[in-house]
Amino acid sequence: MSENAAAAAAEHAGVRETRGPGAQSATTLALDGPLRSRLDALRELVGLSRTRVDSKTLAEAGKVLDEAASRRRLSGRHTVVAIAGATGSGKSQLFNALAGVTISETGVRRPTTASPIACSWSDGAGTLIDRLGIPGRLRRRPVQSPEAEAQLQGLVLVDLPDHDSAAVQHREQVDRILALVDAVIWVVDPEKYADAMLHERYLRPMAGHAEVMFVVLNQVDRLPGEAAELVLDDLRRLLDEDGVALGEYGEPGAAVLALSALTGEGVGELREVLGQFVAERQAPARRIAADVDAAASRLRPVYTTGRRAGLSEEARDEFAARLADAVGATAAGEAAERAWLRNANRACGTPWLRLWRWYNDRREPPTGRMRMRPPADEEATARQRVEQAVRTMADRASAGLPVPWAQAVREAAVRGAHGLPEALDELAARAGLPPGKPPRPGWWPVAVLAQASMTILQIIGGLWLVGQIVGFMAPNLGVPVLLMVAGIVGGPVVEWSCRMAARGPARRYGQDAERRLREAAAGCGRARVLDPVAAELLRYREVREQYGKVVGVG
Image (tube, rainbow, N blue to C red; front, side):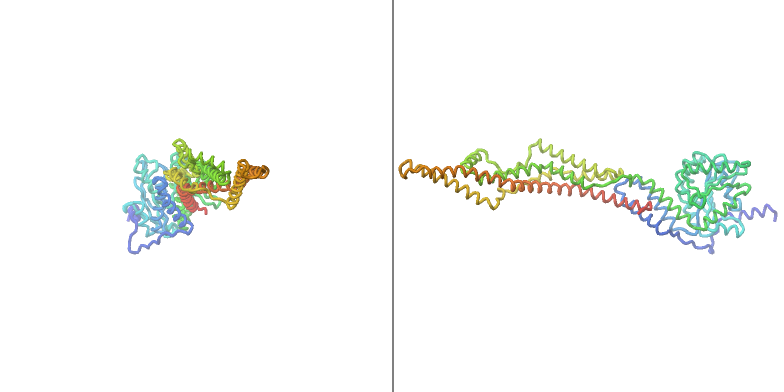
């Protein structure tokens, strides 16, 4: 057999992926406890947020969950690594060098790779390649020595179309597969390693995936002398500016290497590093963790602002005080106090003063109670006070919250405010002064008896004087005059004493009436507004805790 025919036969042998009864069955991917907890927390977070956050914002997190679940059902013994690069970077050449056989087409025509090609170093990776959407005709097996093939056991290498291809469908395929693979090898060349499209569209957004990234400077054979080291240093500088952590000095991060796929220089080092990377079998979990980190980072403005949030006791008390002012709790307490004093004056006043007050009451009967139905202008003012109290409370409760949750708090406050003025009016009518006269203390009968005694003294003294005037009784002005003076002076003294003694009970009676109305107003405001707002704040705290679990805090 000729030399060319032997090479063709070897190449043909490596074209198709082996699928036979002897293929090893792949075990599913197992994740460690912390990563499973983060995924569970992200799923719970999405579920709790659906009614508060728009679906577009949550779509990416949902996609991360779907892809993680899909990857967990597939092989954990294989690591899918994509080779990505720009036109002319030599990625297909590197692909062929790693496989040990010409698998991917290379040439002058651009783009040289129209469709992704997969090469598997072991059996059982079919479902992983199916997930990438690569058909069977584009699946290959390497042709290498047993030792070389064993070095990359478990590797599934995918050659991608050029990410800067003029064909839109090629770029779409690159973006789609990059979101599904476990790791990626970025191939750059000395001319395009600083290309803005590469750094701005791919490397910078994927900076958090540094642990599953390799950056390879290809075609170093074209650089004379120390130029390769200078270009490599400048590439590291650019990666650092992109935020890509470099895996130097044993630290986790992207591996940066220089090689020549054409001459083979540095390919062995890449093969060794890649073999160790695949043997660890940690790339799928690291990729999922990086995806969770990226989703959490993009969701950060939705769940945290870095400011203190919540409704303080001071804000609650201020809201209750504003509602109490709106229903006139202070005025109600003052009216109750006046009613108590008025009742005391009527009960303990002199008969002549009581007769005069009775006459005035006949002309304009007092109710002894405050007016519970305010006029229209006062009612409008009270409504405005209630609305202002709700707005102020909602602003304070939503301060420091992310926009979706602040909006939810305001909406809850507005819903609760509907019908609140009317409810407060009804409450004020029920919680006002009790029907009838205010209660009397135990000393009132004694005061009434004393006042009656003063009146009797006046009557006795008066009759005595009349009897002397008509000659019915012997003249003696001293005793009747003394009796009348004692009654006339004693009546006001008793009334004044009762009035002084009534101030304390009257004040307490007014304070009790004010307190009842304030408590009733606060209870109404709490049930209608504060409780719904507190429920929204509690929901936010729940999602905030879940978000903390997603980012690995708490």
